[in-house]
Image 1 (cartoon, helix red, strand yellow):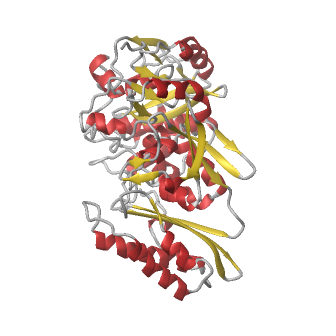
Image 2 (cartoon, helix red, strand yellow):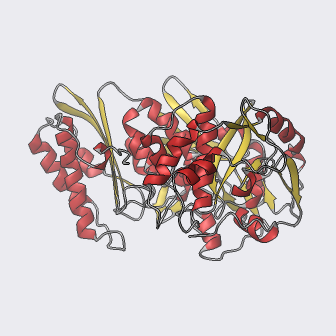
Image 3 (cartoon, helix red, strand yellow):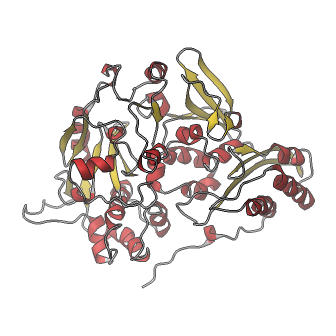
Length: 502
């Protein structure tokens, strides 16, 4: 099999690389093939953010920026995009001063993301600094360049995927807020978009034996899946990337679902929201929080922003990890998944019925998950999502519990409860739901249901928590839900605010 040349835009010029293996990561290409070692290799699993770069792609005629982890991003996935690394911010001729004459050629002008880090003393050892700077650059383009303020809360949310072990976060958060006060710089987006058009590839002309296949439509994607049932399916690659970097797996052929137009859409219908399987977690959670604003903090605790920018909702669901946070939420929201194959067309089923065992599901070898259908909220429903983990941000759940009760006239009319971290698959707490439906919504009912919930699952003990702890947490969270439904304030780290100190 052959590989299609990898082409992307950097510093205003196209970069073309041949013979890039389908499972080679973007970080390997940057450091080993191009010799750009400013981007650092840290954890190799998307946790620390030292390898963060920013991608730019055209969406609806606009340039969209995403900070991503290059260590777990397959290189071919950036084909046809613009790429910025930490070396580029002071060198890219398309990053230009705002409202000023360009600096003299011999003058090196730092980007506001870099200058703010210098002025606020945001770097010590410097290893994490390139990743922080690139996350700040993404924040600058997405917010400062649109006249939006960088609040302390926004800075904390968007930097939660970058870890610093020596400087501490206060000066880095200071730098995030100071960027807007420095002389402005902005990407010449019109020129970038024009150059990206020149890089556009006719994906329909791909050879059938390519080792990295990225079909542009659902039809061509399903045809590729039928023709290559042994190929590794990837979306955002935030889990498969770990198989490459940590388990040293090798893949001779990859099918990338993220270029299929239909799978990239969020469609608003009267009864439900249809979220394509290739929609990023960032965009999928944005669509959900429009309907359920209380989910905002839960959504921002799903890994860090660079992971959410790469990872997809469909990929998280299809992966079926028992500790994936989106599935308990979607189960509680009574979501359905749509599976499709070239031969048999589409079929729809409740999300909780997708799984048959640990990382096993009902999909046939030629089937793919193409979208998730989420019903709109009812007037009576009360939704709460809880994530328990050792770290507040950028951590995997020990227990995830999402409760969604329809309560009318003091009685539980309907109940949907999704749980993660307590079974071999994401699970629906059917016994607990049955113990609630038709009962008066009282403290006694909540306590009885909590006991049922604790007995319904037999969680294992592992490095994140013991089975006994997990069972205790399940009951406690249901009682917490009861208290919050009665107007008691939630007391947690969510209620704390960060104040700048001098």
